[in-house]
Length: 567
Image 1 (cartoon, rainbow, N blue to C red):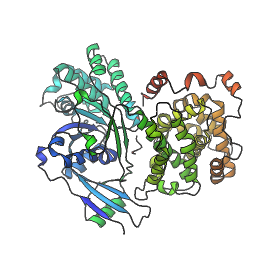
Image 2: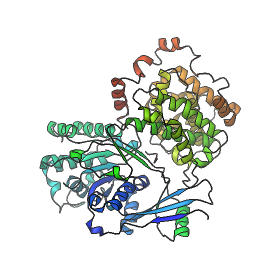
Image 3: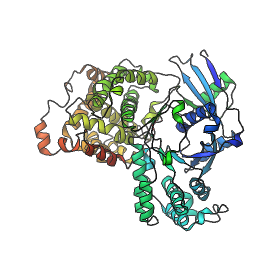
Image 4: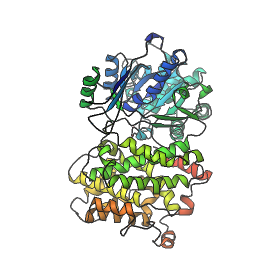
């Protein structure tokens, strides 16, 4: 195989000199390719400054044992394999061996040990990549028992372990139950709190994490008013914007790594060379690694960067996966180089998504000035054949991704009476994708699978009708007020029927050139007065995006949410 191969060996150091300053929940591919990469780069640049900021991972799900066992057998080191190229036979490869992950605990094996680690004064940051869904998991019986034990000081005993000494229900403790128990212990002991840093791919992730912690505490009888006030006033919850496309590792990836480098590794993390991290500089007592020295941006407000990335990359990623699947393709790079799909995506990105950013008065001029360059960057990254990201993987948890990432853009566009045809085609393609999967008896990988498949289960035999689509668009848990917007529903229905009657390529062509019966400004020709009068969409009250109240509404609306799109 052609293409260059370069390698960065592991930092030559005494591993015993490394200590844990950050505990991370959700040690998957993305965490290993992204946050660990930045910290490992910092360790290489300034060992003494970074050595106390290494990670211990925590897993709460049974399958996390596979990752723990792999890492343990690897002496807590692993390779990041960044590949790039548009020709599968000529890919450049760079391998970086990472040593900043020191250990990994499994909460179901020993929840007391996890709480003690989190409560230790040396733990300054607790970071999360638990997907959007992880922020909606309610506290359970085990969480409440752990909180009770933390308040009593029972968990302080280093000899305490599972399963002999504590209730077996504690083994089922959730992420936020463990975090709350540890914060309760720190509060009782008079210690400063740690920073809770979400690195999940969702808007306002710091606000989401904060709301989840505080809401859970207020709902838990074990948390008194003093603790709740401390959680709100003293704990810091910085928002972050994270970006590095990290597909699942395949057996072929493992074989290619060995063939090209001689490295034998059972679970290397595969990714693109590009990575980006924007962090709100808001940490407890200012204690954090100097990530800005290795390329991260530490800023007072993440939102503009987050908005640009989530909308232009993540929303586009979701649109790709459905139209690409309908076109019979398998990988993202195949879809983005398709003769019809690429120009459709570019039009969606420039005419609808970028337009929403330009219309946002909070977006700084320096970011708006590079929108066209950013569109080109995103599309070129998607073309990277080395990433081999599958459309099926991107399609996972489509309902959460739309609700968290796409819905708000559509609402803003409708409020300003702007074009949403590309979005209508995205949702129509999603509907066709779901219908085809249900009819084929294939499993839908979605946290709300029952919700999104029910309309198509009842409409299996209706080959040319729209009953299934109507029921799908009725799902307010996903579509919110869009479920009651007749103009939006009609736009999606027309694209859905066009795909049925004229085929995908003809429908894409119509969207690219703005022709066909769904053209013009999409909704400008509809009877807006009738829609307003019918109460289907309260434009003036719900969708005006340039007020403080709107920002507060956004945070509240999304604060109950999960990604991962690992990008």
